[in-house]
Image (cartoon, rainbow, N blue to C red):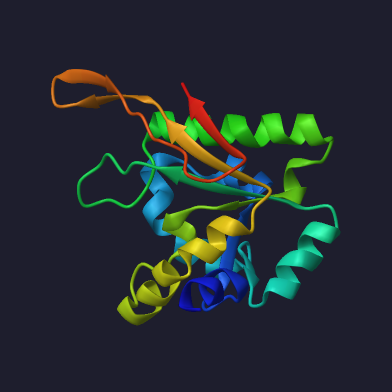
Length: 168
């Protein structure tokens, strides 16, 4: 029963980044400071119920859930190659579905999970199953990365139906 509840009701707000802002304003060097800036400016889309999520999607919006391996110590954010792959996914989704990038919204941990309030952070983390079940696309970003002196290709095994693995 607890598992069903975890995907049938939001137990934390679902916070999304509009595609246009994601493409134009997010750069690796600034990403950690942007969550608060985006929140204060009203850039983030905050949804409190599944009905709000359904209404957004019924209005033609597309939601993408990005999953990636955090490769930087003491930093919760994608690296340059991962961010580039995410932005390319937004453009490709826009073209494939014939919708403007501003109708595409991203769920990305460093924006969607509170970073300073531990209690809210835990509530959001406990809602990840629900968040991952909602989007039109779940994209697992796999890029060539440097780990020490070795180049390695990170490989993720998709566990959900309809998952897109993006390998750069």
